[in-house]
Image (cartoon, rainbow, N blue to C red):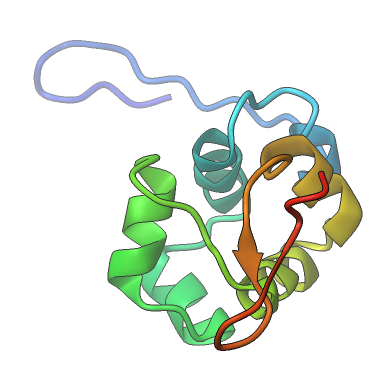
Amino acid sequence: MARPSGGTMIYRLNISVSNEELLNVCADFSSWLSLVMLSNDISVTKLSDDIGASTASISTWRNGVNFPMKTKTLTSICEYFNVPFDKLVDKYFKGRSVKIGPNSQIFQRL
């Protein structure tokens, strides 16, 4: 526990929850991504380097401005955080279109 100069106490909770379990508590993808990055101590820069997405894209996903639209990107995120692809897509991308090629899309059936 630390006390910053303003006198406010800061507490850090050490709770062990899997990345997949976090799917059940986060209402949207941006919340889940932010929380899973925080709980795994992953920076935007590190995630960008590791999955090949730009830091700007990751920031827009975390802020809820946009979401990953390519299957390859979603697959990379799922593999990186060890979350089943189907669960992530079912939870956050039902009814949205995700590109699987230059001009094709999937997941409209969801």
